[in-house]
Length: 112
Length: 116
Image (cartoon, rainbow over all chains, first blue to last red; front, side):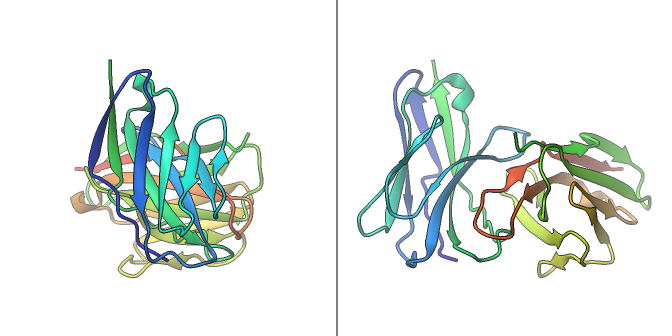
């Protein structure tokens, strides 16, 4: 599975959009981009995933570049409860779901 | 929907004892369950993958005789840490998926194990 690169940390003002980037330059054609987040001392929470089209759900939007080498997770109106570590993971379709390789992620701090 | 629970949420035990952690999918049948371990300020590391009714597949470096995994039903998997030692103190997290394909995993809240 392709590796991902994320900034170590980011700050965001409450109520503003949080844009979390992820580079996955070695992604292959059948690999999806997944985003999870982990609030301190809790289990990870699924946010969103996509292949090549932009995706949106009630939690976030996922923007994937045309060459699929990078993506951005957008939290449109960040709240204090969105403070967490956000993990970007690429996963082979049909491969073992267990190979969710969690990198260090981005620690997002939402400030009042 | 898609809720996964773990029990206990935290446990303290003496060195040399065994500890069992349960992972349950409350509202769906989990074909596959996964066990992760997370040390302080580190990311999650997959320990093993288990499919209902078959033996678990362990990641490299994880001792299968020390971390016993049982996935006897589609809603329950257990992880037993045998002869626990202080270095086994960690946050253990399970997840469940209703298929073995490309669906999201649903994570439990985690179990914090402290071995004295």
